[in-house]
Amino acid sequence: MVAYTIKNYQPEMLESWLRCRALAYMRSSFQDEITAEKETVSNDIGVSLVAIKDQQVIGIAEAIFLDQGQARAASYGLPEGTVLTTLDTLAVHPDYQHIGIAKALLKQLRGRLKMRGGVLLIYTLDDEAANGLYQAIGARLCYQASIVHGHSSKNHVPEWTHFRVTNDQQVAVYDEHDHEIAYGQDMETYYVGKSENIKQLTDVHKVVTENVYTLEL
Image: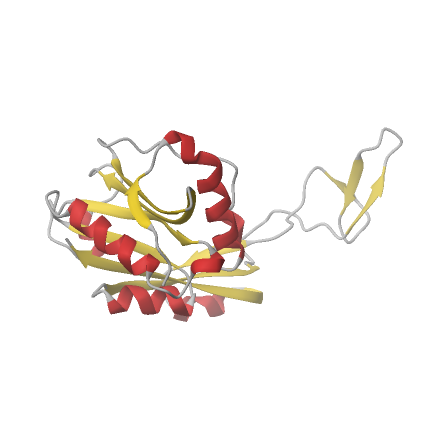
């Protein structure tokens, strides 16, 4: 049994908070979201909770309040005027995963948000454990979309095929005809709402599913 406490995030926890998030994200679908910065979440814009063991952050749960300019309830199939909050971060240090910390953090977070009411929006990708957790606490799948790495014939940005180092230690980029181009397409990522539309793209080499849940508060 791991002994830990859940409390409000404090600025002096920053380094430990960043370390916890980075280690957690390294083993998830959110690797490209690892940064050395943390958004300041004051009480008037959200809730920031941490799980603490031996003065170290081992779990994070952070929610941000949304206004109508940031998200429209109708877009999620919810009644106009529904108060919306988004789960911005949920992360648990790899050494302490699968022992209920994420679930405990979500329970406290949900309790803090109860007076605000409305709906908590939860965005995640295709991590099986994360999706299972959200389903277990009663979140409803709102929609699925796809993040597709591929090519569109409608994209007229030139593709680069090779380069040459220049005398001033820069790089000249060339297309397939050996013509120098100012810039070239390196990787294309498309957000596809309906899975049937993926077939309109070519050279698809990776598809990541985005799952969006709604949880009544």
